[in-house]
Image (tube, rainbow, N blue to C red; front, side, top):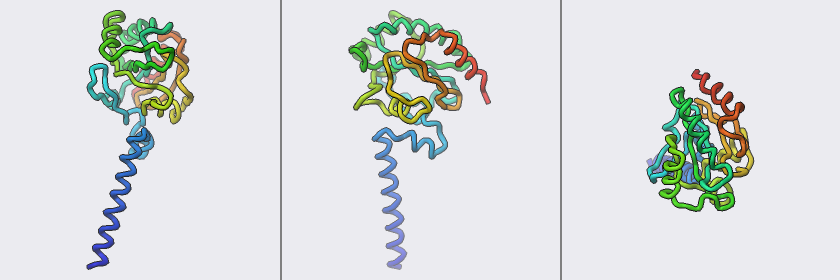
Length: 201
């Protein structure tokens, strides 16, 4: 009876250690590995606050084609918001979602708070696609999503500037990365999006 009790305690202790490791991994931004182990696309494992401060899981967008963009309000690339909105209007009914992540990592070109960013984007560009709370996309404080995109996705490497773009297919796989200066309505991006939208199986 004592041997059984010790065995039960050992199993319970081992389970607690495993759980602690998983929780610790999540806190350190390693949810991508856990997602893979669970058979889920890593992109869907991340939850971020939207521009109003409400948590929004990227799993909400399963089955959609996603264009992930780190943005800024006072950058030479900021007019790309207009192209992104046009792209969204053309393809959202076919399953495209554009997810914008404001960041202040380059030239202090996104200095405002979330309310100021929201006002700028909705007033000047009348954006309709999801806009998220400001995050960091590189360096020590990098958000876990961008840690995954820049170190573990098929297209690694630090974010180069505002308006770097990642294309994600309907299965949550990162299938392309575009340089910051490449405009949203460029033939390359449009063709890749149309190709991804056409693959529903």
